[in-house]
Length: 303
Image 1: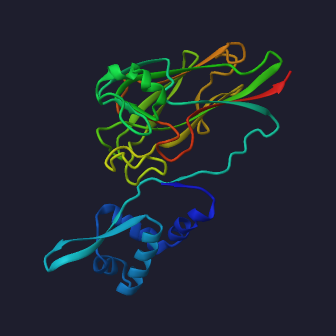
Image 2 (image 1 turned 60 degrees about the vertical axis):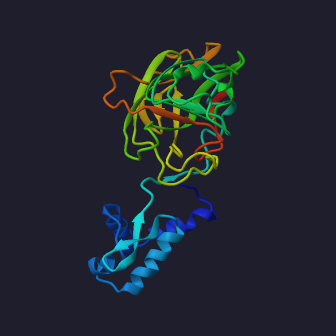
Image 3 (image 1 turned 135 degrees about the horizontal axis):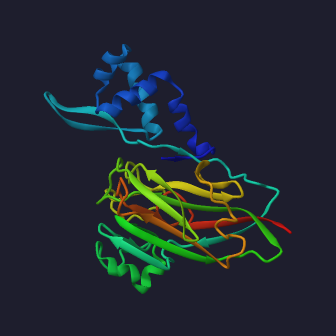
């Protein structure tokens, strides 16, 4: 689930601002329970439990449904969210000027993919799933989602800076998850990143998510399939390479020749010797939760 600091997210924050509701979420994470069970465990009345259940339902954190029981149908509640992200307004190095290059996920220049794998436009699957040859189909440039189990996607863009512009920070942002047939919310994958053909580090993605539909995922895409990823940012500066603020490596802008090279290369890879070969899924602006493709932002000063 993706939250921000707008009015629309307030109902989730309100639902979480209660020790009782937090304990109910913990209990429902173990198994689905009815109101009577929750009342007995928590030591509060059925009426109070019902009010808490209603608030968690309004926040879309749990769902209540009818299932067969010993005396007919009974209502049970279950947790439907296992990950929450909070997106704050971006405010990074405001004194720098910046140039942005937005690259659709299907505009890779090289690839290697093993099944399960595939790609799709906003409207349909390209070719057939689990057949890597379709990664070179001309229609791939329209892809809005690409997935593979082991291999890589490599992207190249031209450096937009002029000779008198000094690069201080390169920021690369994308929405990503692991890959599993249909989906698996707990499915770790070691995803390795290369910039300008230098390995900058590996991040373990926790899963391939379908606990709730992606905000931008097309209606024709099955609920059981991967719905959204985690929005991640690589930042490369004079101080090293960071991944969402955590140091990946000490390689700098100078080490990667980001100031002087005409072409900037990004490779997203699941290595054959990785501990967790859990694949990768890259989301474009018409899938997942973000109206974004792969974004390259060059922060610079005029020299």
